[in-house]
Image 1 (cartoon, rainbow, N blue to C red):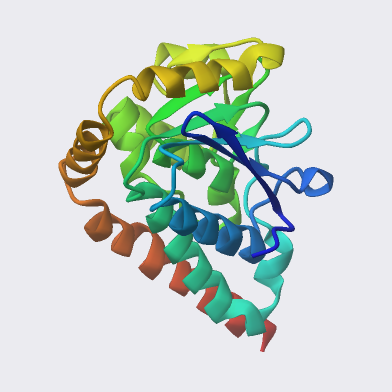
Image 2 (spheres, rainbow, N blue to C red; image 1 turned 120 degrees about the vertical axis):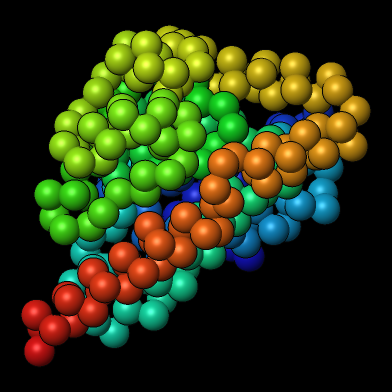
Length: 240
C-alpha cells in the first residue's frame, strides 16, 4: 500500500516507526489514516519489526478525529468500520507498542496513546477529551486501566486538559523527554524491550492484553461501536 496519511519507517534492529502525517490538519485521524495504520500493523505482524513506535509530524501528535468526515452521512459505514477495526488492531497488536507524544493529544489522539503499552511525552504535550462537549463519548476503559477509575471519570466527563507534568504525576505517561530527544528515547526503550527473547515478549504482551480486567472487546463494544453508531445515526437524522 502507498501511504498518504502516515509515514512508515523500518529503523532496523527490530524497530518500526509509524508517524501520523497530516501536519496541516494537526494529524487529525481520518478514515484513510485509520485504514493505513491497520494495514501497516497487519503487515508488520509477521515481519522483523518487533516493536512499533507511534509519533506525529509537525507540532501536534493528533488533534482528535477528522471532524469534517462526521458531516457526511454517506461516510457512516466507513467511519464506523474503519474506527472499530483500527482501535482493535492497535489494542490487540501482538508486539509491544510505544507512543512518543510530541504535541497535543486530544480526543482520538488521546485514545491512541492509551492503547499503546508505553507512553513518553515532550514537556509541551496536552492531553484531553474535548469531544464530550460535541456529543461524542470518550473511550473510558483503556484510560481507567492506566490511571484508575476516579481520574478516568474526571477526564472523560469534564473534558478538561492536563499538561505533561500532570500526566506524569497520575501515571498516564512514563517519562517526560525533551522534544529533540523524544524519538531517540523511544527507540532506546524499544531496544531495551528487545533484549528479551521474542517469544517471551510476545507471550507477555498477549497476557497483558487478555488480562486487563474486563476484556477490551467487551468494553469496546459498549464504549465505541454502540455509542459511535448512535452518534452517526443522530447526525444522519439531523441532516434529513
